[in-house]
Image (cartoon, rainbow, N blue to C red; front, top):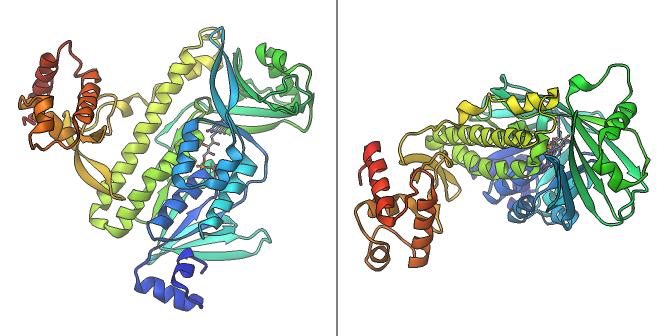
Length: 485
Ligand SMILES: Cc1cc2nc3c(=O)[nH]c(=O)nc-3n(C[C@H](O)[C@H](O)[C@H](O)COP(=O)(O)OP(=O)(O)OC[C@H]3O[C@@H](n4cnc5c(N)ncnc54)[C@H](O)[C@@H]3O)c2cc1C
């Protein structure tokens, strides 16, 4: 037993620790995996006073991935200071897509073995126990989950927990059929040195057989990742030769890189948008790629892993500390994952469709036509204002939210103003000024109230030329729902 709570409780012996932990009803959570989803969820759960340990296999392979500023914001919120040091400043980005070449917003380029190792430093800085192990199996026995693992020395060891968070990425074992899966892609990556540009830059470029992402660093080292359909990989040809073949089909990237010399061999990674089954039950929750992954074109995998961890922590807190709301929490987590997956899938398909040059080629046709995710975006709960599960003080609770086609999970607050009472007051004919000056159910100053109204009136279902017609629309929709104020 090496749980973080041991230090908090200053217990000397493992047995005593177990008793003390049980006496205080501190629940023990084992997080499996040690990527961004695992580390962020572990940090958040520790802050909720759970006894947390992380059982993960260190990543050793150097891999480059792009990250948006939202990843940085997520890491800041989670307190991953060591990981933030590795992320550094954004690199310049150029996109060659749809026959146009344009400078895009910058992106951070992350070397994953360094980044993941810095995440482990963040765990250690927070006093969370980390075990460098490969998990080989899990089993519920009575009240406990037993976790079998293998140490780097190949020695076997069993760990125990009240709850497990599976954050083992896409290699997490399948517990149920995948409800949704997009076309499978293969990413072939090779590193080079001696590239032309002497500043940090990335390029993305579409070509007949797929798309490519390249990075070039100040010292002339660079990498080129070609994402293609597995059907386009001829049998009997080595990965280096295949990579060279796709590299020759590119126009912009080779021109920008000059004549770099390959160093090291090409390596392949499978990539696929997948929504996995059995995401959550009373003993286990899957997070990050173990729950759902997006097409790598979206470049949102790291962000989704972190955002998913923020959604998972209150769900686990509810399951363990307020089981009455457990079913609501599980429903929230399942719906959030399904909707987020479907929204990402829609954005990915739109992006493939925005490239018209190769529309007839198999790689592009398959990805433009994928539509199995569509029904998941159909509106769930009916009504403009409805009761839905939301996060309140670290727990999942039912609250009144505004649901629109664009916001199927519901929005509770806008600019600090709670939307349900605001809509009710507007339907009663109370003017924004009166809302602000007279005591009312709506909390917020005039500026906040105006911001919230301006957002409401921009929602497609509600937008109207004048304030009066906007309020009429609100009234009609509320009356139609049968939720008259
Ligand atoms: C080809 C490709 C390119 C990508 N490019 C980008 C990009 O540019 N930008 C981006 O944001 N995302 C990108 N992604 C997605 C991104 O890599 C993932 O979405 C992200 O890493 C998910 O984080 P995670 O913590 O869920 O899983 P991971 O980062 O995969 O972490 C899983 C962890 O579990 C550990 N583990 C696995 N099995 C076991 C086991 N049995 N026992 C113990 N530990 C185990 C692993 O060692 C690892 O530490 C790309 C993905 C692919 C496939």
